[in-house]
Image (cartoon, rainbow, N blue to C red):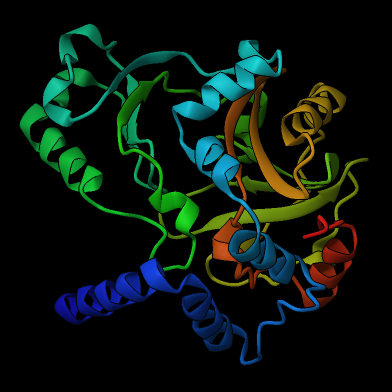
Length: 298
C-alpha cells in the first residue's frame, strides 16, 4: 500500500510541477464533487486557490519558510513575539547537539506537521534524529498538492524553544492552545482555536473577534472534534493587532499565535489552509468568509 501511495504521489508531483492547476482541480473535485470555479471565485477555498494559482506568490514562499518569516516578523516591529531560536542548519550533519538546551523543538523550514519535540536531550538518539531530519530535507512539499509556493522554500533545519502551556490554558487543553486568526485584506475576522491537539485529532471552535463562539461555522468529525467554549485569552486585542500588522495587504492569510499567560508568541503564517480544500467549515461559512475577501485586479 505504501509503495502504491508513493507512486501516486510521485505522479501527482510530476504533474504538479508542470500544471498545478490540474492537480488542484482534480483534488477539489474528489473532495467536494463539484467543479472549482476560478473565473468567478466566491468561497474561501476558491479565492485561496485563485490567489495560489493565478497571482504572484513569491511572498508566500518567503513567509511560509519557518526561518525566513522571522525576518518579516521583526521588520513589522514584532521581534518580541518571536520564539527563541537556538540554531539553523543546512543539513542534519551540521547540528551541534551540545549547544542545544535540554528541551527544544527541531523541524524543517519547508514542511508541515513534522516537528520533533525533545523534552530530554539525554534520551535522544542523535544518529536516528539526524537520519529522520535528512529524510525530511530530501522531500519536496507542495507539488503533489498543487501548492507550488511550498516547493520553492529552501529546506533547512531550525531548533527553537519548547513552549510549555501556562496553568490556566492547561485546564482546557493538553497541548498549547493554537489561536489561528483569519485575516482578510489586513483585517482580523475569525479565530479558529485548537486545543488538545494530537497527531490524529484536535478539538476546535470558531470565534469572532469579540470572542463569541460560533459552532455553526464548523463541520465536526473524528479529526476535528467540537470543543467547549474556552476563556477569552489575555490581551486578545493585542493579538488581533499583531495579526493585522503581519497580514498587511494580503487578501487572505491565517496568522497563528500562542498566548501563554499573556505572552504572545508567533507560530506561523498560512496561505493555503489544508491546501485550500477546507471541509471542516460549513458551505455557508466558506461563502460568508469568501465574501469578505477583496481580490486584486489582475
